[in-house]
Image (cartoon, rainbow, N blue to C red; front, top):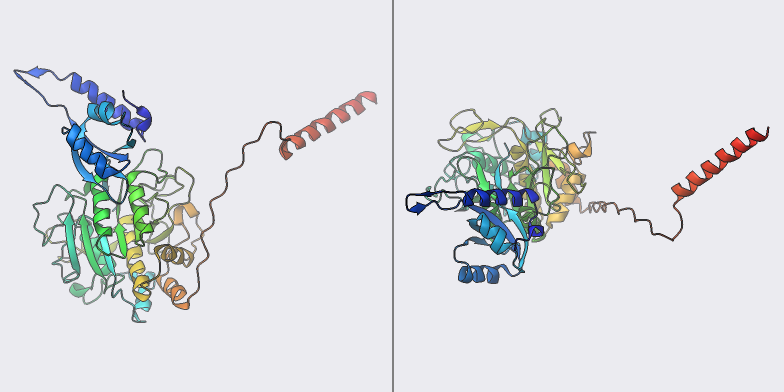
Length: 453
């Protein structure tokens, strides 16, 4: 019997129920009945490997797409009726999520955050590997030659040549902002950490879209490749804001716990409040908003708070009209020439944070991910704007580096406010209640006095 309580989103359950009705209404054409439509879902479960093995044995009609290690979940593709009637009643199934679509979050920015002054001290990202979870990287671009150590494809475009698996251009632009050498521009369009190395998990196809299941698989793969920083300039919009508990948020937080600095775009759904997407709403990652060259918040930059009332973004970086490498054969953004293109978005702000994180890890390979986050947030320049728009402000790379270099420990992040305790019957009255009684008593005394007079 279907267990609707297992679905994180009631909307997903309703979507499946509609699909079942549609499938039941499919009419026979000749002697061949049309096959029901399939859909992907992420199943949070106990012991994912054993659960997947049991499914393969007892329910071979359910396709297993991924068995995750970074979170306790598997991704499946099957019919709506199988999800409702077969999977949801199972005791080992804890939560069922829709395998939602994710998409990209679309020569003055580097000096603006004072990165060149960090380079002047000999810190340029040597010894650090940054994972770019995106559309892939054109490793033959002059600015990225010799930088891309590994690429893996988690999309359906697996036939694309490994030499240039970025048919969109977004991932190459992001990679160049992180670690481009500026070779095609005589150093003009250098990345934040020009001597860092890169790996690429292609989770978004040439059209800029992908799925929850592919993103989680890409994160898990990248986390196993000994990277120190990971960039996710992607996300999905969640109706009514998100609370940081969905499977992708769990995956990015788990990677942060493993010591990887996770830099995630807030999204481009501003300027309204409560528009930060997933996984930008995750609890532990660094969530990045976008500013312009005048230190104003970009109109498109998503704002907080999250559904559970946390401040997001955490910090801002430049994200308007950012010039960075253009992948061969692509036209993403506004092409400047054959080698560079200009683009705007929190996607463009986020790799600035990944690059700065690489500089900090290059200086001190033992600094942990939470300390990197705390330093970046606490050394940001306060723009005197609502925290749910700016976080702690626009980042200052030099100030962050100097704090780390000085050995000064950043202040621990403030603890979340404790919820007010519920009143306990029979345990006395609140001050507010007593105050109301006093006011009423005084009023009655005055009325009585007037009556006597």
